[in-house]
Image (tube, one colour):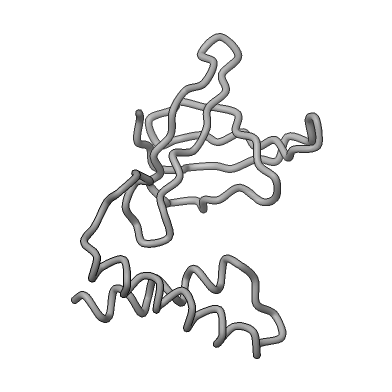
Length: 119
């Protein structure tokens, strides 16, 4: 796993139904990422990624779960799991009444509420 700060993001067309993005990092490294939609990072963001094919210069994002922790099975206490479930349910209900909501806005709201509860 690598970490890098994004310096540039350039769209590079499509391949096999996926969007291609050339991402240049502050250290000068550049990799191609594939995405179903827009690239899930912005200039200035520090992201975690894994080089999937060094020869072709491709990489994939290391996705974190909706609450900022790497995805893993069985993590967290029972109380924490209940809080997470409650926050995601409340966020889904809240966003159902919005005109321009998406799964991303639901997750963002749930994360904000969970962080508020646990800080």
